Length: 257
Image 1 (cartoon, rainbow, N blue to C red):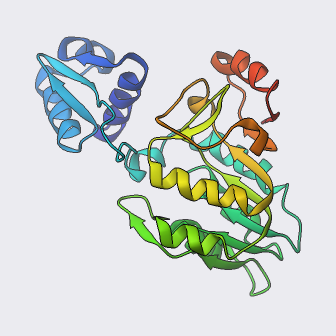
Image 2 (image 1 turned 90 degrees about the horizontal axis):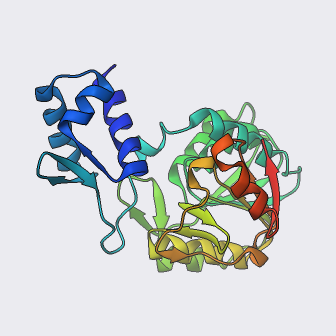
């Protein structure tokens, strides 16, 4: 197991259990105490956990900046995110005006829509670049960036300027990401991200939420909207979250891939 894989596994464990001590981590990841202590120190230095006596705990939310680094989020459930993104792209028809919210799942839509004759508005520098990169001819998607403040380590544009920019457009369909999804609706950890998502919803005829199984049954600090504002939820099938999807189907049209 590489150091990067071990770090991801440690963070996954913290997400599920909240705390991990050195002795337990040695058993779980077949590593020496010195290696685990070094891993713990690096994870704490990156701001992804907090140190305790003999181990680390999940970082407690404090203020707005609780979003995990993009490099970590991009490597989580990539296969599932691609399947969700492919299904989402099937909702898009030539001639549509589409707004795509920045996120690691919405990012995966790029190759599936790049060559459609559509217009794409996005607050993600990464999505804009990837669509342009994936275009095979000049006849593919036309891309508009919203402008705004660059959120650190995300490629995401947020803030008042972003929201004003979005309000200048009208879209046939929007695709949103979310940090968490439960019976009350989608939520995120950052207020400015949520305000941008609310602006996207207001300017779109139809709204599709993309969320892999790891987001289901969870709630973050900032509520995006209730389910009446969302037309479809696209997620993936996982045994541990199948009952949650069944419950959500009472609130929104759920599409499972």
